Image 1 (cartoon, one colour):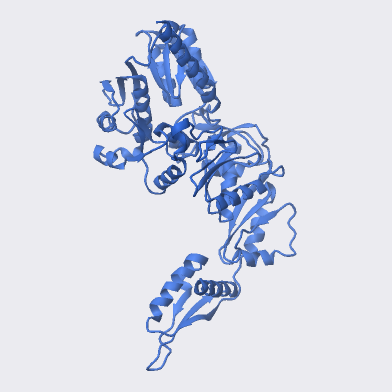
Image 2 (cartoon, rainbow, N blue to C red; image 1 turned 180 degrees about the vertical axis):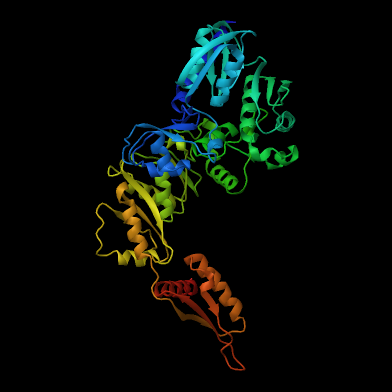
Length: 550
């Protein structure tokens, strides 16, 4: 008995230590309700933020934010300032949890109140108390855990948190063994049916039992062991989406892809995917080396790419795994700089001081970086970069060159897209034009690019765009022969070259044309013509020359 008590205390201490970690990672964005009953989120201003950029990321206008916060102009924000952002219909469904809630109830059923808090924060509550208890509560703008703590103090109960699972009960109950006991929890469905959920639980081997279903088929009580019940919550968060209203069980089952791992567990891999902002999938106790993911296309390719980098033999003997504090090398050692490598590609964690993850992504995109960047908005000062050693090193240097003290509130990044002129021509036209406090970054190949990355003060943004638009004008367009072939297969050859030039340069395919056979009766000659500005004509010629030289 003494041994069991010691083990239980160790489990509880471990679980309690996780509370601080999970609490620290609660998003700073949170649902609230204004006096007019319109939905909004709270946002904490970061270095390099502008209202234009914040508004763009949330799909609302700058004026909407100014009005909601009774602000006069777009410069009246400071680092650390908390502002409200209205939530448009387009992005309301993108939030699965909130960081603050307001709750008022009188003599409400305790289990119902706990279920409401759980739904707000995407927790699974396992209730180990007695039925029939009620509670009166009136809290405003507090975190879900604070609301939970307030409620439980009023009824002389406590809880233990393990990941997104909360075990609620009196102290004596929590100090006894709870992991090997059957519990029950309440869940809410919005779009899928209980029958569909039950079929997927069975398909994935999640051993739980649906005890009761409400008349409207939206509330249900499920019994099972604690860790199995947390899987129910994970599965609901994956499947309970509007697009699955008409999808049958067979269609959903076929959309789950099992990702088999050899050297790290599925739960470890899922945790890393979460840090990268990728779909975390769902794991089962019966198949610890398989992660079931409900994605396809590029999202699935990203998961397999990360798997190829991190699922390496190093994790077998010493138990080391990729984690935010240090990652695993092929020889099993841990790198303090957060790098994982399989010998061909590597995954590197980069901490940001002044710019955000979105800024870093825009920098790499503008410079045509071949490295892939990952990360989550919740951890906006951390990014992960994946690629070859050369690609990752180049990406890290680019990010470092922008992540400096000159970035602050009132400054902005933006990419300007040219419609008519390549970047190198605009760069040449800008010679002699003085734009104070404005920096242009043209990338590695401005001769073939139609964009430029601009860094400037926020109040200069419109001026810069006006100047760039005035320089993005076509010179006099003309017809010009730029290539010829003298073979019977000339037309198909020129058509293939046109497609490649269009792909490389972005010049409209309709600007190209092929002449009729200009050869005599016994010979062939086909000429490729282009109708364009002198800049585009030269770009097409240079590109064709590069193709022939390749």
